[in-house]
Length: 54
Image (tube, rainbow, N blue to C red; front, side, top):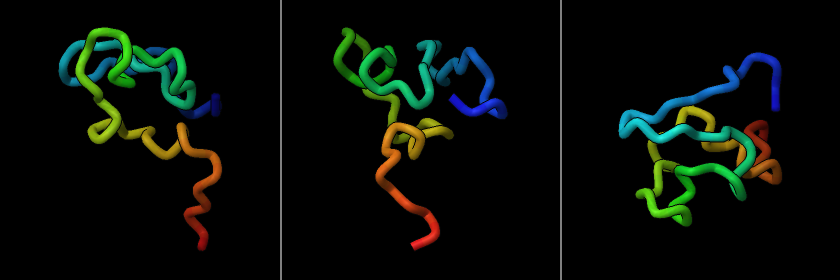
């Protein structure tokens, strides 16, 4: 995880997100909570294959 990302990211719904770690993130839609990915400020960290420079 990048140094400029806070360790605890709390979504507007109150769910703690793990930015850049989609498998363990509580907001990924697989842990009994709704999916928070589309509202996450760090969404692209979960897709390292995306190159914003292209």
